Length: 311
Image (cartoon, rainbow, N blue to C red; front, top):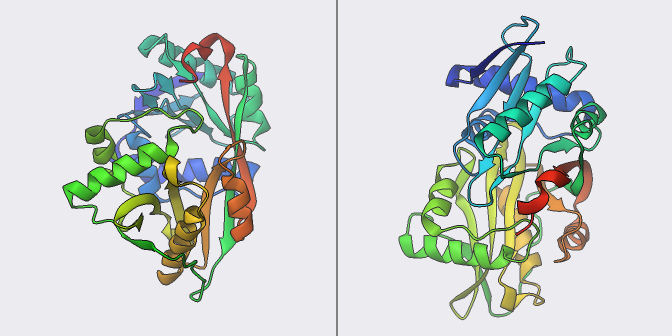
């Protein structure tokens, strides 16, 4: 029985990270751990500001469940996450509360909750409310060393974006939006909100955003983030090539550059995530370079809320 609900505060960060990591490790020993900075980003919301709710169950202390709706007003969608302590066996009441909260805030929005593919308890909890598989993703990793080889392509220049320069910020935004325009679930985001979110993420690495250009024209980008520095692991958070420049090997060159950058920071492995149904061939590229799937997670949806689930 839910006996208390409150909004998380900064002092709750360590306890939230501990509960989330314990939840994930219990179902999947290969799951990625939530660092302090990643927990702050989680609490701030993936797209829009989003309170993290801490639920007490049967007077547990301090709390037994972590819920964040993760609203995205532009897409009219919730990317909801639910984590519980190990002594919570029935997730029905928690998920029911979560759905009711979302319905109360935006009854016409879609909801795409996430879950580790091995988390049968959570998946079954959502299934009781008629949520089914929407998309599957891999967490992929590879070991790296300081002598990791970059790819050289004649005429292609890869260099850091100056993320403090307004003109380069707009170029970064343009190539990001162009690269992902045909990806599942994508919706173009205005520059002002996009750049504000990008630059204020706690895991943002101002030195880790790279631009690929040909004759001075930006053709692609790669972004590395400080998601797993506590585990000595680099993270490639985004990689894209403009629609008119696909098929020239620029994606692999950017990927290798990002990996080499992670190696230069002393990391002994690197991680990224991929949509297994991505039509761009990203999964094949990652496997070619040396990444292997270590973990998997899914997004689910409810047909009743499907009217806004794909733009």
